[in-house]
Length: 266
Image (cartoon, rainbow, N blue to C red; front, side):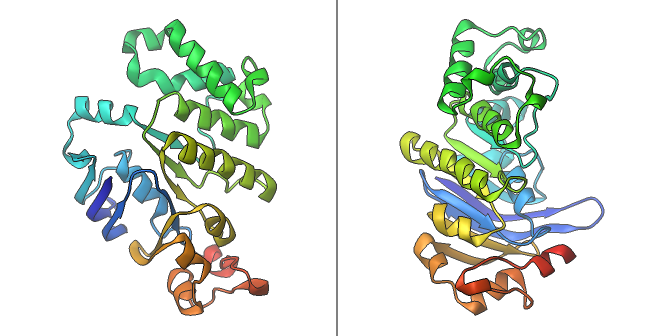
């Protein structure tokens, strides 16, 4: 179980990105974080694995206080937390296989990793992950030769070889078209269901949230303003919707589409 307790993040310029955020995620959940750009979604995800250092609060995972971990302990914790990024975060001139092997960096001698030398088992794991993502035939191509959807599958494969118990996905489909978005989220859903990997994923559009989430939190200006289940989000009221997305938010054609006008201001 993951517990976030009274989490606050204030940046050096005084920006308050998170304000006293608390919630719990059960093992095996597919939690989606919703809200406008600038609401704190990315900051929240990056605080969980301490890519961003929280200002106050605690993050407890399986009884371990991540916020109190020293460098050695944090390296051990991060082995079990995969991270998927909006813009893929690949080394574009390196091969797909090399990018996936980067997911094993927490398991190998740092000096060996600098030489890009990984055990045979790690190579086999990387190839199996690529096969699972349906892109094994791309293994020896440069990452920048692949389409956006293929690059994101490389990112998922990289997370998968970490043998993670938790995956953090920061706007993983924001730069993809709707068909690819469903395909990529379907990949994450299969890992969630088949492997029991807990997924925390930030998204903008509630039609995707309604399809994939088992648990939802809504952020606005760094505060939690909505919590619910998959069933709750399907029955979200206009008042709840506007609490997350602002008074100018619109529900288009009877479905929930988000507020593009408000988002442009954020």
